[in-house]
Length: 88
Image 1 (cartoon, rainbow, N blue to C red):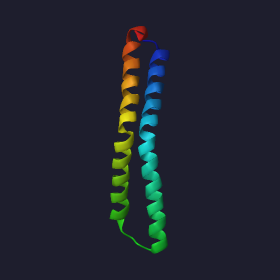
Image 2 (image 1 turned 45 degrees about the vertical axis):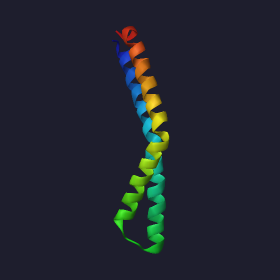
Image 3 (image 1 turned 120 degrees about the vertical axis):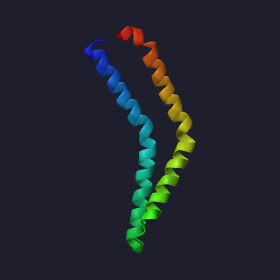
């Protein structure tokens, strides 16, 4: 395996990781920001509100986008396996 092939595989892996994880992180970030603004305006200092809402949003996001995420990962895995002998 050449250095260029290794770097290509690593770059594709990091890109795939970011593509798959970003919807969940973005949803959690948006909900956390909205709840924090709400807590600041109403002067409520309860930490569990943010935590529970983020857990709920992550669960819902995974429920709706889990199939897409799994399909992206399976496609990436197949592409790695199909190009394995070309990399050696």
